[in-house]
Length: 216
Image: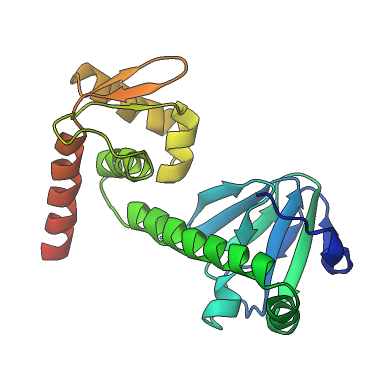
């Protein structure tokens, strides 16, 4: 993110690797912009801790506390030693008034982050493990530049571990399902990419699983 945030260094906070930045369900009145290090976002679902995301420098988290005044929807953990800029409603208002250009860029990031978060939660609501993996590919396809409508094949420059963490499952469990899809000739797995033969096939598969869940 190409923002000069040095003028906001007085808002800087540092956390050591493994520190909990905030916990799910606790009240929140701050959000954070990562300057260095990575932050892991986890959520308890069905009494199991699931990895939602790993955020990189330049990314925001905790913004729902400002936008909805709601309890934290997940737990944030320092994956490395991290340096964050911490904002609350008061100093964000100051930012809005003092530097509208930066504020506008942050608001655009808010919008994208909210969509990404809700989209990833949608994946985790699927009860069928194969459908969760298929839905990860659908999510990735949504972020790709528009391709020819008649082109069903999609190439994703991603790893098996990345697919697993977006699906909220262990690497071994993810590999088993990906290998199953490969045996069915629905995907091809390469060291640097995964090719989905027919993305519309996955769309129909996920839609059918969501529909059957709602009927149960």
